[in-house]
Image 1 (cartoon, rainbow, N blue to C red):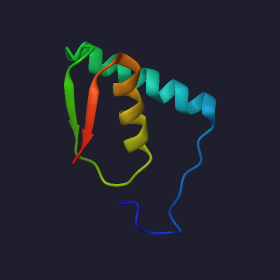
Image 2: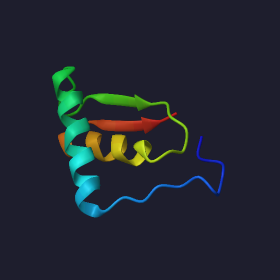
Image 3: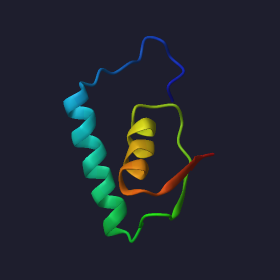
Length: 65
């Protein structure tokens, strides 16, 4: 859940871009468009900033719950 300091992951900027683009494509395939609002309900894990950046990439507004 992101609370254990011994549990961590590393990500390069290239891999971050790849993951962000992949998730942005998933959002677009689900019908999310520029200006749409997306609520993100996730623990503090590596996928959270990926989801936030994916929303930003397609122009959707994200809100972390």
